[in-house]
Image (cartoon, rainbow over all chains, first blue to last red):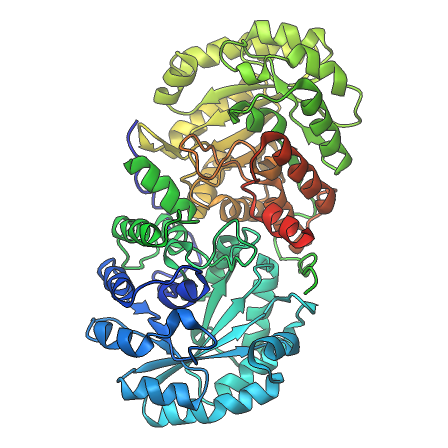
Length: 313
Length: 313
């Protein structure tokens, strides 16, 4: 029995011809892994992701090491990958983080807001509006330096404390992030509870408030297996920026702490089958995730990685 | 942190109001599990599935025990569940199997055809047309007894030996199964490689050849994580019969033999969020799958089962 190879490509009506994958494995993935990863391995990971054709690779986070010790080596890592011919956004939680990122020459940064009060309190120890006020000088200084700013927005669909999140509440925070100067938003389903109708509903409401679809990316988690169905709904709405994590990093399937990031490979499999260009070489990407899984000492939770690497055994 | 509960229900345009889930865990699931399951446990499993609101529960298979030893107890099992107020289809590979099923009072049977020559040869040791000839008297005798007949069709999208399967080849076998009297078809993506455009393409071609969507069910595998996205495409096309396996039975995520059945819980999560009625009580279904996983001695591969049962811990 030979490998089934790639799926039949059948372009589907009403879908974009190209999707930009915002690869979050090296940041969102590794910051949720318990295993400490040496800086050299992280740098090699980013290099391999770039070699696999990913063009936007979130590299690390300039948060205080006390909060995210897994990424405490941001100063050492960033210079090792800065020369790669790809976009390398980094997370900055505040002005101190922005200073550190700018000092190293970062040209793309991201801030991390919350659509709900409960998560703003838990994650940032602030109200939603206090967090926005904290980001305002970060964004305005970045824009003054002509640095591209992404605004992550967590809990856009459901919140573990508050349940389903009302669409108008999400729209308000999106509007605030764009008004302060964010170039793009990433709508996060942080606990993975969203379903496709909810996705379409939020995107439609945002358009109704004057937010163009081009400014929107989607960030789905596979906690309940919904990430690709939700992605399909977003693509049908015209979204062309999709966040994913190589190998599903950050989402160990049997851990209670699973974040359940959508695996980049599962996304690429679907997009290739739909005739949507991503620039990614799936074989190289799978090989990269298999290699990274070896570094972490556990198998990848990505179904596509498991299926294709089993076939290679 | 409390459980996030059910997703926000947001009815999506162009989708059916109700979906019938054809539950295959007790047959397609258990026949692919290595663990031998006692007949009493199987009967209890079927009872619990019915109690969770599933109305079509494929109970077992009347194949020769040499082929599928896991289901060699069909004669003992069926009478134990036959009184349940649900439909209980059973698989019959040939006339001998039909005799056994009819003798026990089965009112719904299923035959299992292949869209590709390679799989017909591997699974049935026949050509596609020889297999159809074998099913012809099975279907005609069943219809003479006013027994409902489902025709499974494997390898409708990709085949491990032949690669992508041409749509006209699938349409031809579908037409033959309907012409011989099958009441409904189940279009199987046996190796899980399909993507949503391919699904829409096949369904459209079938309609073009006079096959009504009402006669079609879909049977997706999650081998590459595509099952729910493919289901969404089928729902948008008007399909209202979806096969799934409670707890994802039959698809151990780390086994090379993984069949990767779509987990019923992941399906129900999506359908509930889309405002589509299934009659299923998700909490009871998850509890059933957790119980069955204990019998099998391994965790369920369903993401929704894992997410909800973790929260209950």
